[in-house]
Image (tube, rainbow, N blue to C red; front, side, top):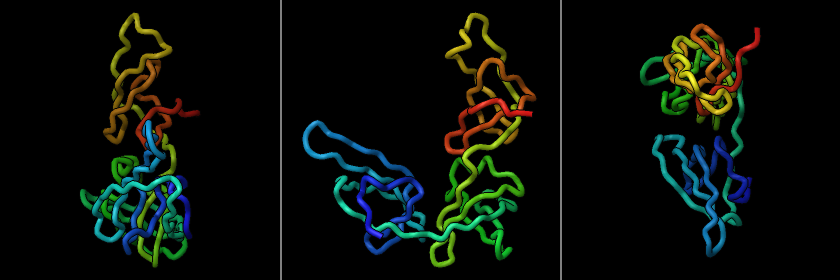
Length: 188
């Protein structure tokens, strides 16, 4: 399906130069002179090689429709992560780089979404937010205002996040899996 370049979003799968690419990041650039263009960082689905491409906003690109499947995270090691298809119960592994830094938030039994093209997984998406426990929290520095100051904290999975001063070790918080940022204190 042909779409305008300005409709490209992270996670889309494009066909370009007879290869399939997954979009990792986009940036709209509006120079002082001339028309705007889109800078797209993408990874080859088969080889894993990354590249950057630029298109004018009016250019059209071929977007591939991927089959979305619900899957469950089973286990992982330093190089690969193993999931199970929720419908067929078949297991499949993907390289850890396919998920990137968000892989630190995977927990046994976590329900994720896999995009498949011709039966092969090309991307796996975690839930937008997860609940984690803070295991380390720096003490509050006296005199800091509560409105704008955050302090470093460490989550149960080892990821460091900036947290509000009222959060202490042992508190469960909701964290964004996309950029490892604090959202809110977990309820209950």
